[in-house]
Length: 69
Image (tube, rainbow, N blue to C red; front, top):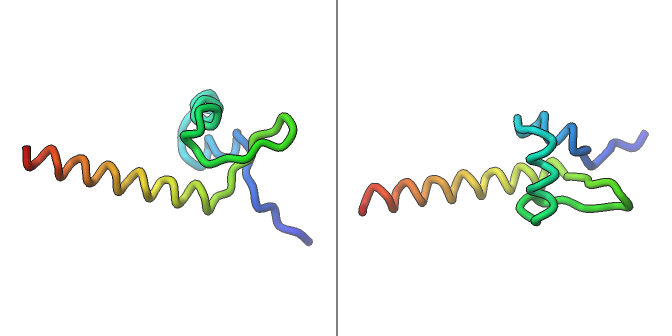
């Protein structure tokens, strides 16, 4: 049996804890890593995990910079 490598918009919204509308908006402007196949937008969990990690690091560095200003 082949395991799926992608998540739908609905699954991604649940995984990240945000609305489907936000997922659609972020994917449309390229803020979230996604792939469009036909009319479907799909997301790989690994890519989302890396994206979240990068967001955490950016948030941490911004907090450190604000502390020193």
